[in-house]
Amino acid sequence: MHADKTNRMIYDYLRSATLQFAQDQYGVHLSPDLLQVQKTRKEFSGDFTIVMFAISKIAKKSPETCAGELGQWLREHYGNIVGSFNVIKGFLNIEIVSGFWIDFFVAAADQDYFRIKPTESQKPVLIEFSSPNTNKPLHLGHIRNNLLGHSLAEILKASGKQVVKLNLVNDRGIHICKSMLAWQRWGNGETPESSDTKGDHLVGKYYVLFDQHFKEELRQLSGSGSNEEDAEAKSALMADVREMLRRWENGDSEIRRLWEMMNTWVYEGFDETYARIGISFDHTDYESDTYLLGKDIVLEGVQQGKLIRKDDGSVWADLKPINLDEKLLLRSDGTSVYMTQDIGTACSRHERYEPQLMIYVVGNEQNYHFDVLKKVLDQLGFAWSDKLLHLSYGMVELPQGRMKSREGTVVDADDLMEEMYETARKTTMELGKIDEFEPDELNKLFHMLGMGALKYFILRVDPRKTMLFNPQESIDFNGNTGPFIQYTHARIRSVWRKAIESGWKTGSMAELIYLQPEKLPAKEKELLRILYEFPMVVKEAGDGLSPATVANYAYELAKEYNQFYHEFSVLHEKDVTLARFRLALSVLTGRVIKSAMQLLGIEVPERM
Ligand code: ARG
Image 1 (spheres, rainbow, N blue to C red):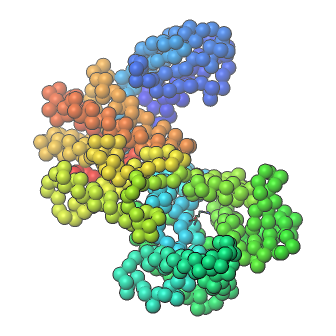
Image 2 (image 1 turned 45 degrees about the vertical axis):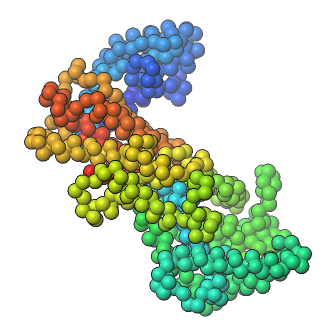
Image 3 (image 1 turned 180 degrees about the vertical axis):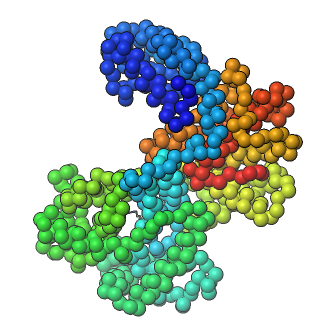
């Protein structure tokens, strides 16, 4: 057998060989998923390790004996793959022959080697992310959300899936009316142009202003001894907001015009922020379009006896039989709630795409909401409710005492990106790493590094975990950071440019790889082994919905390359064949770093 150019992985190959051995030699039939094949740990010698316990148990032999016998057998039957082996307890460590790695290298020198095209006929995977409300600008939580959504989409595409990126805008409701009312009352006609303010920030300002006035009103009311809920019921401001929402629902043209104007401001602001983050969507759903569908579906559920209507007219799902609460779906005045629109949105998406999976990237404070959404859909008889998957990510915080935003509570996304740009600029200038750059190029570089730092630092953490974002640490050129990996890429490209400048005849990549397998040095082999794993890493990241897997891989590869680069010379190596081999290895490493970073939504520079 030769290096597998179709990307079928050696893990599978070793697994099926081992199963064949167990069958032939011991008469043991084992299900493939019980057999573990893994990368050999650093402290042992070998490339891959086969764990023998599953087989030895059934074969009733000691794990050591089985490992030794399998090793012998593999040498006899698969000598063109398996070079040598050693046994440590129940672990068989095998070393793959050098020719395998070189064959892989030649195959991978082809630009398309790692590219997987999506199968046309399969059903799409939907990923909803971002999903803001239109009453305030995006914040740090949205940044984590957006990075996860974008990266997951890229990763799933790279593993051959059809992906549709969706946004949901919650553009109606009480909270939206609050900023509208505040603007109407205290805005004096202020616009983004007149105040030179980004539209989403301007609307956010009125949302805050409403809250200030409301709190003031509460203070006065609670002087008379009533509790907060009573006070809210007595609040004249809140009464006006509720009235505004009713007028909106009735299609009152003045309110609708105000609503449209302010939402347009917000969308212009969001678009700018999304462009800066570097994300986009295939389609945007608006709550104002789907809440009525949700309402219809709920009313139908009442008619079919699947939901309950109480005496006051409100509609509920009874989830007590499955150990959850009752859930309100329509208020007594007939208006809909957050859950109602999600029912409508899910149904309309299911109809539109017939997806194989609907992923919602939403923070973990909404775990209960999505749990209930799924169960209500199930109760309503939608068999596809099991296709809903909530990717629930943890909060992201900043180190204490840093960066209070203009609202004083959350960290504004635009402010943070601006600060990252500044930090990238300062750090790069201090290091003096920028020789002959045009101002325009510099600007691009600082943006790339600032965003690279932010994105990598957030994405390298398991999405489910709460995390602390440390801007200073994120930009450290020597740490486990985006800029470190970006710098490694620039370094590789510069090696390549120097080779060309000094007159190397490079030809095609494959033409550089003429090394005799026996001459493959250990460090180069290690790099090849890591490169070989890239498709598996992508698949694992997709299966586990975790870009962190790709991020940590990119770091491991960059770190390994840097060690190699410091220990050995590419351009000054006397052995020409080896020098050319190293140059090609550098180029391939650069390509894989670039692809891995692209899966994280991070650009890499050609030089810096
Ligand atoms: N707009 C909501 C919020 O800001 C999040 C929406 C999440 N997506 C959904 N399908 N419910 O809290």
